[in-house]
Image (cartoon, rainbow, N blue to C red; front, side):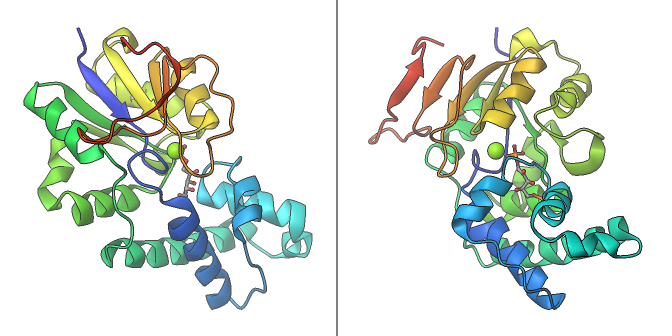
Length: 236
Ligand code: XBP
Ligand code: MG
């Protein structure tokens, strides 16, 4: 029997990266007087590093090494990232980032059937609660039995830590749960935690390797617009 569905956030609940996180990073760089700009293509490469602070550090090491000489680099990155979060929250508040097809329906159906729902994401907690608030309404935050986000575990995806943490909070074994993910890093994380995983591909992830996924779909669909199965077992 299925006890819980564990949702990723970025790329799964909503297409947040290209027109959400990316412009928020760029706005923060501008506010800090930096001449850095992450265009759509570069951002696609940077997405291999999960976590905003980790992504900024990776960018510095690879593309802007002069910043390595800053004193208290970690603190400075944390401040820059806080500013980025402020811009991202602004975008959510403006209602600019909708849920992907089928998400609201699926969440409602799971709740109606008494199946628990949870979140396992590398993004910052406020980003998750605001996305829920501005799409499904304030009370939807309480529909989730567990929200695992951001720095709550030391190792972000592709490490399994966030899924382990959420399963522990749910007090459930992975065989009674399903993860829904959009990326290869997310899939590695959920599979390493022993979770059967459904992939709903997103704009940055459609050509990634989803070996090991139970099902790969274009999206989660709506009754009048069914998703296309890209690979996997339709009977899951
Ligand atoms: C999401 C991420 C996050 C977001 C930015 O990956 O990697 O870093 O891009 O969020 P996943 P923060 O969907 O696999 O969880 O800046 O808040 O880290
Ligand atoms: Mg994702």
